[in-house]
Image: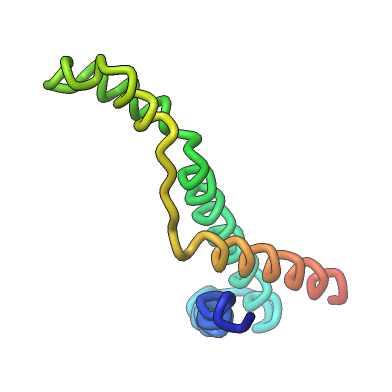
Length: 119
């Protein structure tokens, strides 16, 4: 079970370190507020990248890719085959960072929202 979340466990301390670095770089009122803001911005970035990877994994952009290849492709005869078009449309990809990015993004967003309410 721990092996499944290995990348998430690596990304978690890296996010904390990045939030600390950004809190030293950015000017503001107190270190804690800058840290919370930096961690929240990183969590939003992680959720955006993870969401895009999730959409790509599930084939959301396959129709668009097929349309561009059919319209602007050099080899029109290859794309007219029904079998090739179905394979291209139903093609699935997997990325190893999708789950860690989404998981860390959601966890840090919730934690920073809770900490900001406590201030």
